[in-house]
Image 1 (tube, rainbow, N blue to C red):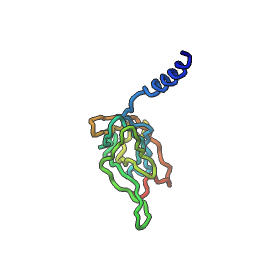
Image 2: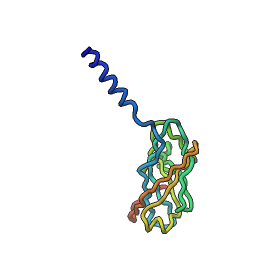
Image 3: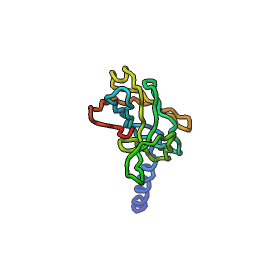
Image 4: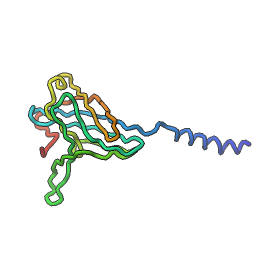
Length: 153
């Protein structure tokens, strides 16, 4: 009987460990790098974690901006030069993650209003193909003059 418990206890432990929360569609680590030049776009970085099913990120928006676009940094195979390419949507794999970070995918935000600049935070909404709308508050960080968060624009 004691030997049977030696088999049952590890099996129960594995079963309990596998009963974690299901994958949840979420956005975290959002931060807006504010351009020091008013007419230039600012860069929004964030990470999207996929839920139980594949979904597509359709749009990034905020009432505190004039316009937003998602972009990807790509290397031209002929010249090796990095350029920005606009992307209209991006697939978020189930239980996976997609990082929007410097030197890769990112969102460009134009016309960040004075309120977001002064409060040093901005409300951003992420709209997905399954109908989910996720709102996050991102800190607004100023970029020092001479630093270019979005070279190529």
